[in-house]
Structure formats: structure tokens, C-alpha cells
Length: 286
Image 1: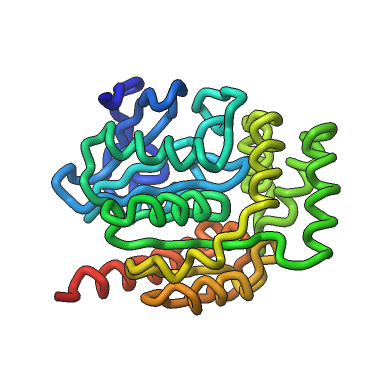
Image 2 (image 1 turned 90 degrees about the horizontal axis):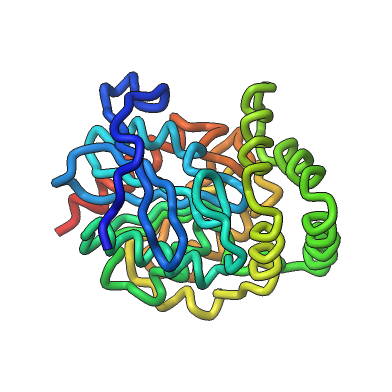
């Protein structure tokens, strides 16, 4: 199974300042064609960026441009999202298996995983099942149990109904909640990303996220882990990241001020600095 080039090479706004060339294409995994972008030296360490619910790879634009100077970076659209195919069998298990197949399609032996929100949940599931493939783990604005209070369970039930029957409204409201200080262009782009998500996929994944509880599994993770969260995140509040950092033995917590749920877009420079310091420190260990 090989990555399929589709679109060739381009230099875009995300990477132009770093003189990086982004290669893009599709890869066939588990019956679905996933869109990806790749940048950086092919012989460098591998980083895979995994986006969250109703997002796509473009939320990582600042990270692709920054880290492709020193790492072989891949960001992709999960099934049902962005430019990837939108089959009706989306589940967290399917997303985890897609990640496995994607890694194998590129011939990567070991990777650094960076996951945001639902993408962090996928990264957790993959690391628990394939620990030998993950060298370091980064969990941004995510949770081992998203519905940890009665209020959040009731809210999720209402949200699930709205996703099924009024998805455009949910997409609009979600983009107003995700950023700390976003201009009209950022909010519009977030709304369009959400609208490109299959509503069937969004509803099925939301149902699975509502049932997720990985708290008992967290002590099994031994990789060096960075847990990073926006101080004002209301979708996955700081307490959820604190729990991750407490239960994963080799984890450290970094809270970024003046940031909400999409922390890597709210504060890209601070996010990149925290991630770079973590990777450098972990990479210099014997």
C-alpha cells in the first residue's frame, strides 16, 4: 500500500516564510481515500499531525511551516473530513486504523504523534495499541473522558440531536466558541471546514466521543508526553489536561494563556515554542 501523489508540489502561505515545499496527495486506506500534505526532509524524524472533530489538516498550517524545517511532517484529513472521502462507517476505531494504515503506507517505522481534541483521542487509542510505533506523544486540547459531568452529558445529548437535524447551525455556533480572539476570516474558514465534514460522520463520531473513557488505560502509556491546552478552553477544560498529565507517567502539562480550544491557531508562536522545547528536550535524552 503506497501513498498516491495527487497534486504534486506547491509552496503555500503556511510554509512560504520557511522556504518549504508542501507535497500533497491521497492515500488509500481501509476503503477510503485520505488527503494529506507532507513537508520537510524525508530522512528526518516523522511527525504526524491529527486534527479534531469537524476540522481538517489546515488547522496545523503554522505547525507545518515551522516544524518542516527540521522534521518530516505529515498532516491529513481524517475520513469524513476535509478533502478526504466521506464513507458512512466513521468511528474512533476506524480513525485509529486509518492512522495505522497511513503510517504503514509511508513506510514509517516510528512516529511522533500530535493530536488535537478528537485527534488526541485517536492518538491515545493508537499509542495504547501500538506503543512500539510511537516515540513521543503530544495531546492538545483533548480528554480521556470528555463527558465528565452530568451537565456535559446533557449538553452532548442536545448537541447530538442538533448535529443530526441542524448541522449547519452547530457548525456556526461551534466556530464562535473555539477561538479566544479570532477575526472574521478565521471564523469563516472554521465554519467552512466544519461544513465540509459529513454530517453523518460528525454525528457518529460525536456519539462515540460521548462514550469514551480511557482514564484507566492512561498509566499504560510510557512515552514522553506533552499535554498542552488553552487556559480559556471550555470544550476540553484545563482539568481534563491536568488529569492526562497526572495519570501518564512521563507527561508534562503546558497551559497557554489567552487561548481557547483551537490552541495551536489561537497562539501559534507559543504553541510552537512549547512543542519545540519538548521535542528538543526529549530528543536530547540518552
